[in-house]
Image (tube, rainbow, N blue to C red; front, top):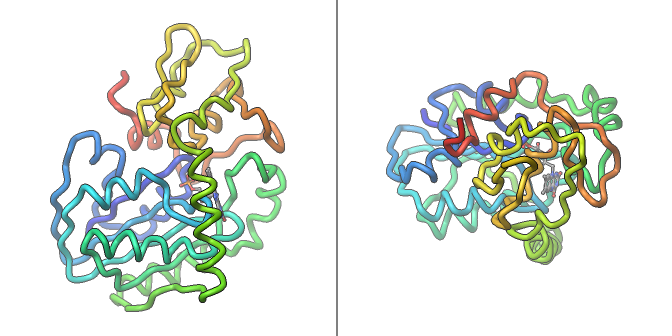
Length: 255
Ligand SMILES: Cc1cc2nc3c(=O)[nH]c(=O)nc-3n(C[C@H](O)[C@H](O)[C@H](O)COP(=O)(O)O)c2cc1C
């Protein structure tokens, strides 16, 4: 079984690790130009972005040739995934993939414009993450066939929100980032960026091909990178994932 994952703050990587199998980072596969994969089962794990797919996951699906008897996908989210998995079905279908199993896991929301990480952490136990993961792991090992769908109304409101958000989030979305003077040029931001969007001489310079994932903000050891509008200064990394694993997943070759 092969699992392709994308993660900014570790939730999706943790889920991928819990499911097991051979793990492949989507940013790394795109960077290496590796696109042909075959296995009995192939899965994707990624975060929900604005009721849809991160652009990097769409890029991967469009560029890859995946062959399997059983396709599954797990979307991690923080509050409301709406029809994000419907979006996946649509993108998958255009890439010649029919998913057999899709599901979603409610985890800590890392979306800083709307949520305070402190509040999210207080709610973590009520999200029943481990119970949900036990169910998903069992479903996938039994090769269950079941698609998570939300109904017509959800499909209708999810699309315009996704499209509107995409105009602001990607590429020049990095113009909303502020770097404070306590930056000590450690280059962690460069290393966790899945798009190679950061160049650092003394302070990070953003190159306007941003994924909008906030990995640079959450992992800055100095808490020196901020959004112009953020609910709090607290930052997040999934407790079961180490910074080195995020760097190994997203680093675009910076040593
Ligand atoms: C740009 C962006 C958009 C997001 N949009 C949503 C959303 O529409 N619904 C939701 O429930 N969570 C949303 N989130 C929260 C993430 O989906 C959630 O925290 C996810 O588990 C993060 O996964 P990761 O740790 O693997 O990066 C968003 C996060 C970001 C950074």
